[in-house]
Length: 168
Image (tube, rainbow, N blue to C red):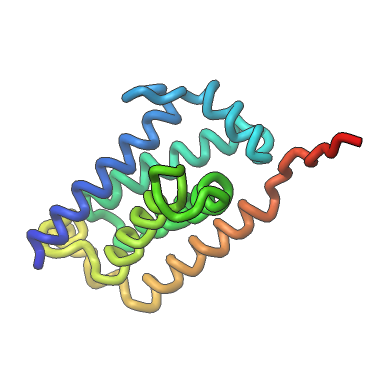
């Protein structure tokens, strides 16, 4: 089980961190903050640069925390939050599958992150090495996930999409 948790943490965490570096630095074919800021503006997250930076930092930090198995449910909760926002603001209108830019990928990331939060990072984690695993009680884990969902809903609530113009 511990080897399986390590494998999931490394793949999900490192891919999420890499995804964030695309937004933050333009690495790996990304658009960097300038391009991502414009996209966020178009989605109604204004100012776009602030929200792009917040999303990118959330993705990088959540990915690193998950990959390392550090700080229990904090990394997975951050990942859940940013993926809920992405799923609803970008992917929801496009259905389920990634082929049509649907919610498939953010749903997979969020589900894997929630599952990791609920199972814990396993023995091959920094939390285990540092003796922090016992700190993360089920109540703290559920509270972290609940805060993540509330934060995502709050983020979506302050979004200001451009009004739809109807030709007359």
